Length: 433
Image (tube, rainbow, N blue to C red):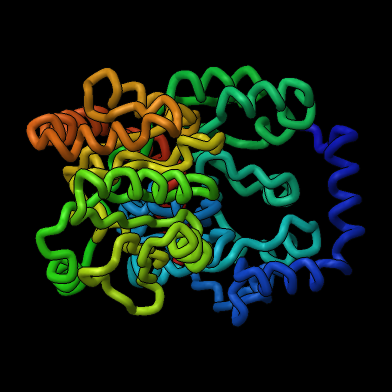
């Protein structure tokens, strides 16, 4: 394809290049906010933190924790093909998760800021032979610079929401240029595939949602046992991956529920762990006793709100709590992933704003595997109904498990689509041997 860029992309590249001298200030501010890893700042400038291994290299990029979790099984399967694997992400929490769960030998780096000079330095160092981008991570300079080096690029678990589609329809030449640089788009759903094709993607295949094939999040047995002993026989509800505004809703619901359930313990897991202290402060301002897991605290008999503000421990919470409200859904965020609690036997409640997982939530709701809370005023009643009827709760949890199990298969379909590219890399490795 012609490398003549649309005007909007040329302007973006010029602006990004002009802002390069200001990136130290940008990164310093993010560091103060806890959004950067202080010892790995150079990686954000495209400096390789490790040596490039010899032989073919697959580069996989996912924005944050959710994207990284969804492709862990894919990473493990690619790793067995005896090719080197570099995984990049953009958040501190995803970096922590990578340290915990990436297979031995897989390299993690923070993705460079989307500035031409930093991206070129990154590509010079790593020299990838294949690039996989997860869901919707299409940074213009990364796509353009990678394309100019003739590196095959594939969108994996491709996602394009209806809202994003409507916005991009106003800039068709811009998004069309980026999408046409991709060799292949593997879409989560037929709707995603249709939207990607309409915006200019050339080769689109619907492979399904990799999140459905991911394993249930792990939990250390000793930690689970300690937490179970601390909770004892108390009634327990959890709110997972909550966003600002939703914690206040859960705290209000707890205050209302404790009149009928005086032994109630509510666990709140903020989507961004750095907000944990603020969540605890909200609870204390409401007259409730709160404890923070990040401080090594466990809930005691007086604890009413337990804030699990740590990384990689949702597996503990989902194994412990029989009822889970999934956050990002009572505010206009788009909802968080319901698959993991469904696989671990939790009864799920969610709000109406679930555009990020609309097909999965629709399937769960239709199968009575989740309970829709239409607005915040209904949250207390929804939680109370689940607590008062163990038989109903068990039925919802069972339906959720059966639903997500039946929707699987995306991993094998994705690997089938990737196999020709991985075969090329295996041949390269053989030639180098």
